[in-house]
Image 1: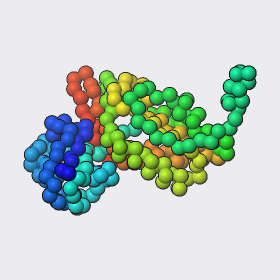
Image 2 (image 1 turned 90 degrees about the vertical axis):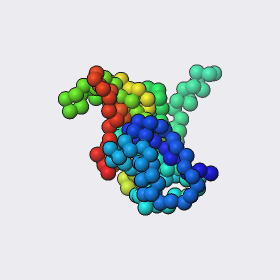
Image 3 (image 1 turned 60 degrees about the vertical axis):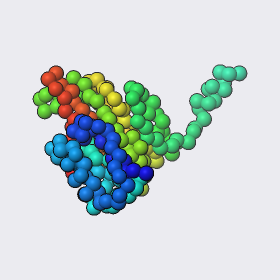
Image 4 (image 1 turned 180 degrees about the vertical axis):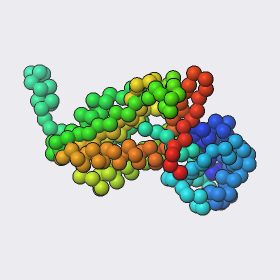
Length: 78
Length: 155
């Protein structure tokens, strides 16, 4: 199972996609985000927040095979 | 006699349950409010949040809302669970609209029923503040001359 990366709203526009599958190597969230930003540099123009498996994440968590990672800007619902 | 049965059905006090929903259809505000009316309560406070035409002097034509839906449900449920621990309230309902919304259309409804109104007002205020901070939903403002995804204040 790959690591699935999801984008929403501003990050989907910046990345030009809504989803990305990465290899199955275990990485930290920080490393994963850095590599996604290298591929999609416009993401660096935004303040980014993250979720792992649909839970808010801080940045130093470990991502494993099959995890779902979401990259988004601070939420603006309501 | 069907009429009598219908009348009885209307009069029977039914248990109410918490609810959270995402919908691309217009929200029935009164319907949502009346779903949160348990018999042990005396007041339901309902917030009707809707699309503002002018933000910081700039005119919005319409809004588009997008959600990370499975996570949004989880976060809304966490807010409901937390509010029920922290406040003296009985039933909570949250409904958020997604997709395109015109000026004045309702984007969010939060209904809180409590035995006494003060707890319902306090919980409703807490719920909308936390929803805007934690629930993964984003809005795009569309103007005559462009558009912009709004990024929340909270890091």
